[in-house]
Image 1 (cartoon, rainbow, N blue to C red):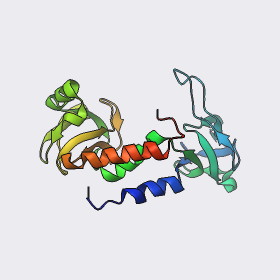
Image 2 (cartoon, rainbow, N blue to C red; image 1 turned 180 degrees about the vertical axis):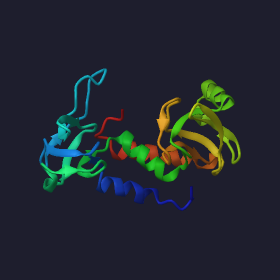
Image 3 (cartoon, helix red, strand yellow; image 1 turned 90 degrees about the vertical axis):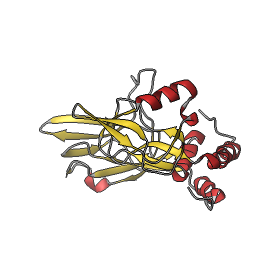
Image 4 (cartoon, helix red, strand yellow; image 1 turned 135 degrees about the vertical axis):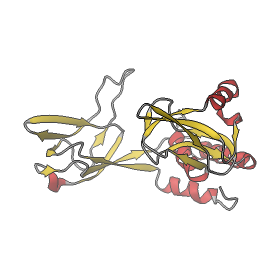
Length: 220
């Protein structure tokens, strides 16, 4: 993380376009029929147990087995490939884009991912903190735990085999944790975000400024 980061520029970028753009792709091969049009508002699944389904986005039919795909995020349909309606598509084909309005918490997380030192998953696997790291987190919280390059910080569980993972980034405190123990993480996704100790006041400045600038939003 550089001292030369222009926090005002980063925040201005989010203020000018406070949205995330989420591409929705075909879950498998089949014939697609859209259930939305450009500009439609959609909502994600909700309820205490996510028992209320999200807005239907499209139906995909393979071998006379139709499957309805619902929205997993709130937002507006900002792009839709109408030319694919009624057509056969391959798995992974981009079908539409949802423009999701960011809340303050999401904006803060997005900014932090730009300025923290991210340590990513080396393989698609399940991850756990090393026992001594987890013990320190349990006692005082992640942000009290300092790590250095070469430290064994995480255990990777893959194919019923556990492998130690060593930190290879800039030393600092564990500021953000992006994984849940025992839940599979795709390769390349961040596991933790590390902040050099001397930069902690700058990180707090970011959070404080975003909260002030987006005071009309509720921070959840």
